[in-house]
Image 1: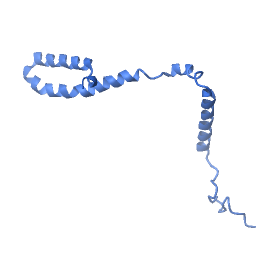
Image 2: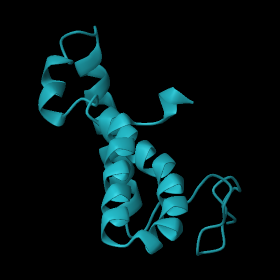
Image 3: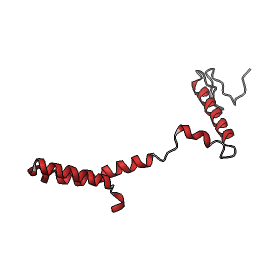
Image 4: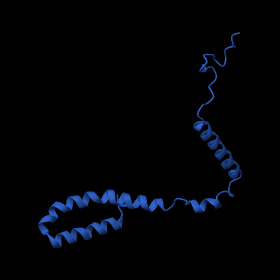
Length: 114
């Protein structure tokens, strides 16, 4: 359990406990359980903050592109696909899918009646 608790959090809460004890000793009995419960969430917040520093920032992604073969081509292909999907989505009158009746009543797979 020692690895789950952040030493800085424990020291900080101990300082708060000593401060409460010095200011109002009668309040210490009510504050102590809260301080003990607060150790875990505060340790988790500090641990998450410490791990977020390991992420690659957007300025560092330029160095990644040359390290993987085909990376730039794959990115270009994916961007083109995204642009195509956005264009299809923003079209006011999308083309009907195969077999779905058109507004005139005829279906794409049915022969036109003469």
